[in-house]
Amino acid sequence: MAGYPDNPARQFAAAWRAAAAALGQWRKDVSAATAEAFDKLDPALRDALEAARTALAGNWGLCRCPCATAHPQDKDVCDGHAVLTRRVAEADMPLCAPCAVAQGVAEMSR
Image 1 (cartoon, rainbow, N blue to C red):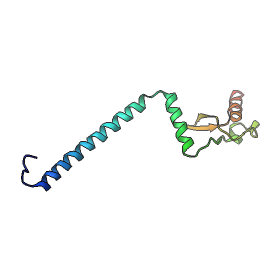
Image 2 (image 1 turned 180 degrees about the horizontal axis):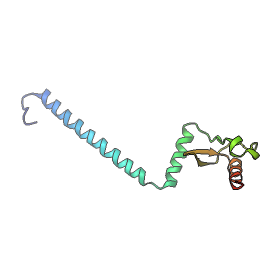
Image 3 (image 1 turned 90 degrees about the horizontal axis):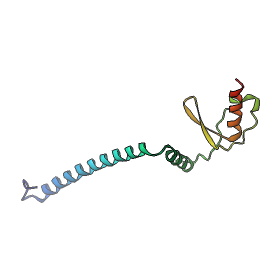
């Protein structure tokens, strides 16, 4: 601020720009560090955090099994309460225990 000894408004503007630049850099640094730390978390902890986020978002664990096509011989076993997820066609599908077992049995018979 040595270039603006007589003008308080210019001193304030220069200080504001310097503070804004420092805050912007701090935000970038914190975002990068947070992303890096999250990537290093144990997968089980990430799964637990994702489950908590899902529960808070309103997905209370409904089974999403396409029973009629995934296990047609046992299509009436679904209890509707997902207890696990299974990767099906590049997506995680919440499944209840009966559907998970029925899918496994259907796949074993192929």
